[in-house]
Image (tube, rainbow, N blue to C red; front, top):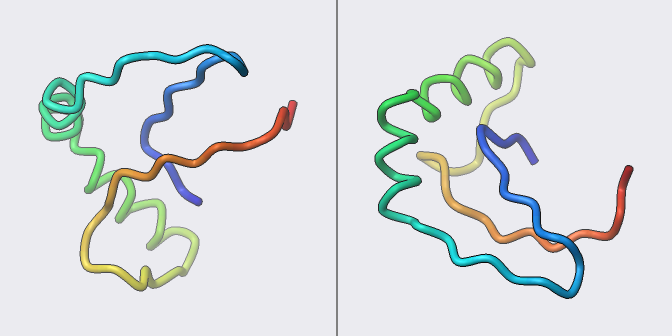
Length: 62
């Protein structure tokens, strides 16, 4: 997974997500362009046409 932004919440807690605010920030900071640049630098071709929001629960990886 390649991410331009992430929100982390402690296990057992929750957090409201302002998707409209995130969309605005993504446009202002050109997250899609930054992700395209990273993919190009890594020599990777994505399987999808554009970036997407993903909810990715994970275990403690630190």
